[in-house]
Image (cartoon, rainbow, N blue to C red; front, top):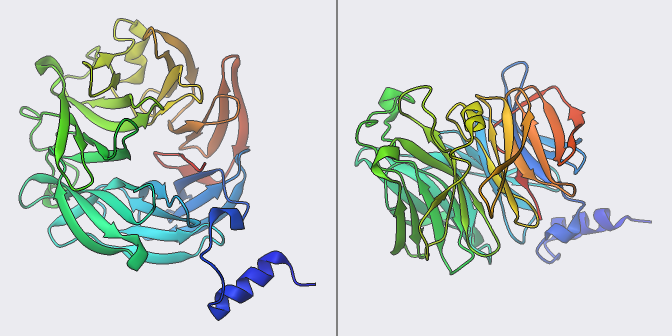
Length: 359
């Protein structure tokens, strides 16, 4: 008897099947870019327990990914200054398409879909004009580029859908770069990071800028609370050894809150927030630091640092059934909870910066 999957495959081959959806497969729980020991790069799907489900080759180092809300496919983004974004079929791990930025642009490693999945937004550097850009792609027509608009600042990195209103929230890191200078940072003395709240057509509806004494705290990564509050992780570009807050919260109706800023353990982050994630119940927020080798969990209400887990080269982070799950550059995947941490898997891969959870 033909299996359901085989039957669907036959329909797909004949062009008679309905559009595939996430319900058509036991899809991975998490996604991440990684590097093999031989120096080649892949994009991988992981189970809830950290086991490897598929891997798909990438032409260069990856960074983050975004999952289509309906179709079982993801877009894996190159690390800055990236020149590719690969669309991957999560049923098989097969590549479906490769996106390239326009001439004079490069990707910043992140993107997100509209709720209906018809549009993909990508953060980009228009480096010849020194401005941040959001690219717009039509996913219903083979991921054709259909436009772009200003991001509201320089160096846009992560962007997410707003929860409090329709639109986007963008972390403009404030750092000017140019491919001719590699990854050198060209404006550290004058950088002005911000959070920009934009409509889907690029209208700036609100912005948050850090105080002047923190203008070198580059806002990089974002997490979204169900009530619309944005968690943001920063990367300090100023004098080394400075004790500066790395995690903050913001809602467009209120002033920003910087968390755990008086706790001396903040210096264990070594000025670097890698990934950030709210807990499932929204009462805590966690941040990773590969430079510090720690994960810190902070109480959202009080801003107090609750727990610290030491994991060498940790960066990827997502929520799990028991708390959080984290990945490291040593190939380790661990479960984090109040009583400690539990190793889940150890693979022959060096996990990259982000661990993307599929819901």
